[in-house]
Image (cartoon, rainbow, N blue to C red):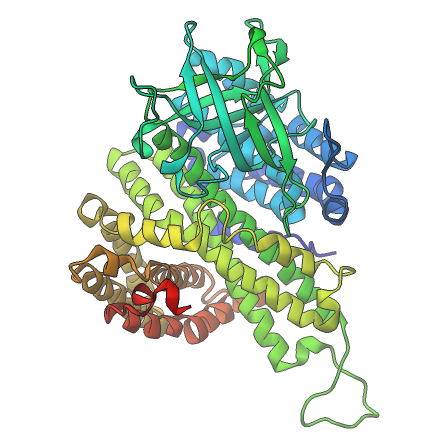
Length: 604
């Protein structure tokens, strides 16, 4: 029976035929690995996801965590699944052997995690946040902090969070007000509130390691305005003794759970730090430990935020992907209607997949989810290149590409794989928006991703306002060079040469529009429609990703001919139906339209 989480054939194509991850085994870090060990990790992930994550996805949604004033109650299947995940060593899959890791390439580790996000986004969120937290401390923490907090996270004994937003600040982190008062022993006492903290309270692990943004008061006792005053702190739910055992409860308490339309299986919390309910070491105030240097916390947290943005993109892709596979299965097995030229009611009905409009909706979904997954896998390979490429130039090139593609990897799947979920509901007809079918939950779960880790507007500002101009346009030029390589290769293939020309034209328009926007002479005008720029830019990037896939599918035959033909047809759809959408957008951007900028509050 074909999986309804992800197509393993598609995953194998991306990993082994397109990205050639086997070549990584020639590098020292991955020398112990082979295609067999990569497949073993994928097989294990697929098995645990199918047997322990997917079966309680609906129950996790319908019986969401609840708080009785003292304890958060979560259905038992969640802990069973997470314990199996940790026991299989998957929390440390990409880590060094010294941390109990497998030293898997990031590309393979991300492919393995796709099974869990597709099977149960609510339960898998606990692992996703813990891995990101631990990776951040690996980069920025002291050896003692790594020993005390990171190793238990990789073992699955501690889980982690990221605590950025506050009720009054939202995404405007310069306005956070959580205070961190220095103590004589070198620790800090934190007081304040953090909102929207996923996995912020539970009994699923021995401890919870919160990474908290807060401000150290200046000499005058006031908080330093803006982001320059922000520092990063480790604030554990329970203090850890010098021998590694757990000590007393820290002054971090759950004020209440937020009840969201999706991701219901993940606790989402308002946390109070330092309210005095618990008095560690005899007094109020949550004990925290400074990470790195004071006032550089936002820079450190961006390590986790950028990793999380790609993780959100993967989550969006996989919710769209599983929705697509559910819709495909339904369309193949649901008889209804007849062809326009075969209206004889005595003849049997045909499966709805034979109707052209249903094929249109399925083909659109295929291009969104398979294109999105390929984009995420490409970004994951850039992480491997950044860490292990043989030359410094290659590593720097990978960093530039990852920098400019991160806002795309987060936002494009969040928009278009959500659209895939909408189309999956439409394919199901009336059944699609009933709770008896899974696709309505996939849509609700995915609707959160356009907001998670920065809205489209924030990603657009990051792309247009920072990434395309950074280092005198170095990242922009690096991406252009990669597109040009693909265009040149595809130009030599008769079946793909038209797409190569279309991609060249589209990228040229991106370049011209970018110059026009920066020629406005007013950054308010330049950035006014940044989210539209992000959407057009993203479509060009995904067109490139589809042309890359087509290069590895063209002229293939044999027993897999249908698979390759499907890839080529999806590429054709994206170039014929999707890429042309950007031209009206780019025309509007190049005109420096100020309709939205000029709108006044009173006019609404």
